[in-house]
Image 1: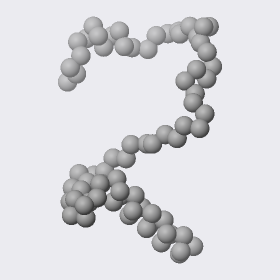
Image 2 (image 1 turned 180 degrees about the horizontal axis):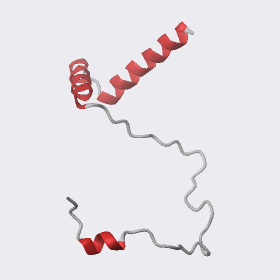
Image 3 (image 1 turned 120 degrees about the vertical axis):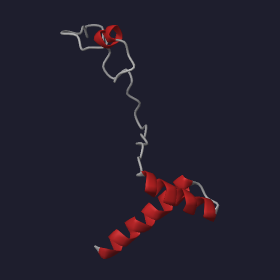
Length: 79
């Protein structure tokens, strides 16, 4: 069930046509910007890693990065 009213949902529908005559190509492009994609962990994985990070006195991000770097090393060593 949607929280939005039917009137509001209708206004968000795609139009048949859009006017891009005044659009500016690349307006929001930022050269050199590195995007950090969100990573979604399963709840049980998150709970386990969060507990391990806390036990080691490090942030969850630090622990996940350390584990991933170790996996990369193992993969590269096996190749």
